[in-house]
Image 1 (tube, rainbow, N blue to C red):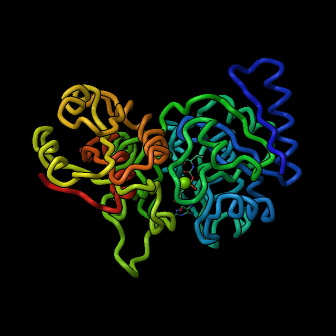
Image 2: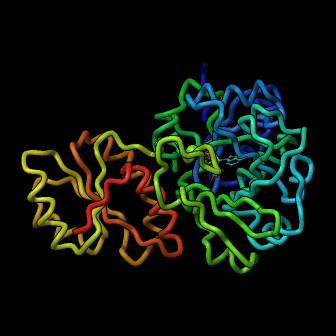
Length: 350
Ligand code: TXA
Ligand code: MG
């Protein structure tokens, strides 16, 4: 398939034309990759089962792993899900934005889109290109992250091109994703409490300003054991897997250097380092490839860089990559969740 690439830096006339053309591709059942504030999405008409099926094929994604549907306005969710007061409280505070809400689905969403479940995940993105694009489509857009199943989510167009060129009709290049990790996913429970299924830029503390209780699903901070069924099907798959082995180190910098020296002689190693620690690590680990993770005190910057670093380190074909274990506080929880999964839980307490 020939993939057309549209480079959009601002919403000028040319961009409007390209977005309308992309919308026509969606209406004809095609696939369009578009930017959002979290990561890039691989979009198709959510109400067209055949189009949604093409997403699973392009990604190599198991068909029981449901897709999020993206709407232009929070109130559009009503056509596809049984919304309630809690949905509107969340929408008022966090939408448009990096929050996905799971509710009981209406029949207007084909089972293929929702991976066979009775529920559907709804998100109203904030990115201006995404919003215009969805508006022009006139249908909700089913979109998982636009990576091949098992590789890190794409946070810029070159990541998308690496994974999706020739597999989709259009790629809309809207530059770097603002946040760089996928949206926060919550499920509204019967008594209007929330269950957090995936942490993101909207933190537990943020959610507690709206809901009286937020229960963090076990799968957020642990890997599932054999035979365990997750609340969110995606959690049973190993995500974001770097090609080399990722090891998370829980301890101070000096102990990390001692551990690395002792355990990786003769190996080609990479180290993901807070900016403040780069020169110390370079002086002490002469042969390591060092990746700048951003300031130790700036988790938003770390979130922004994580997936790029994983992709870059893949290209350097290392034997092992070491990274610091993030805290579970605030946005740290989203980093922690993605990193323990990428590391398949290899955490060393120093
Ligand atoms: O930021 C994001 O959410 C990005 C952008 C493109 O919007 N999308 C994204 O989609 O990350 P995806 O498919 O890569 O991850 C969605 C996760 C999957 O783990 C899936 O299993 C879960 O959401 N999910 C979707 N619908 C669900 C449902 N009805 N019940 C439980 N989990 C659901
Ligand atoms: Mg994904």
